[in-house]
Length: 127
Image: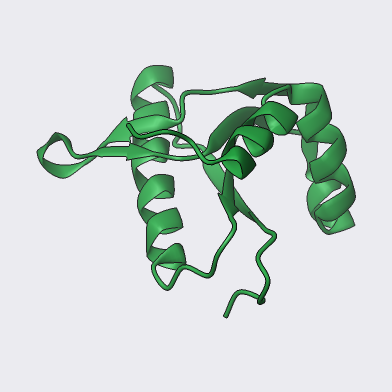
């Protein structure tokens, strides 16, 4: 891996702690979605999964949590972008598929839901 850009370092530093991330996500997610997550169960998770031909997929930050009521697992995938990325949707989808499968293999239970959140702070809006 190359040297991380300062804004990437800042993003990881700010949101690596579950309590801070729960607070932030609880304010930016739509209220009905935020209410379904048991924020007390939020914990950092592995951000790396391997896909076809052992191709490595590494997300910016990943957390696990459970849903209120039924305790179903959920992965929260946090992706950070400073510039528009035409491949963003495909990138997040790849991460979600591979991280979900890896989590399911580790848990030996149902595949978790995945909630992807993109934090963008570039000069122009994402398309």
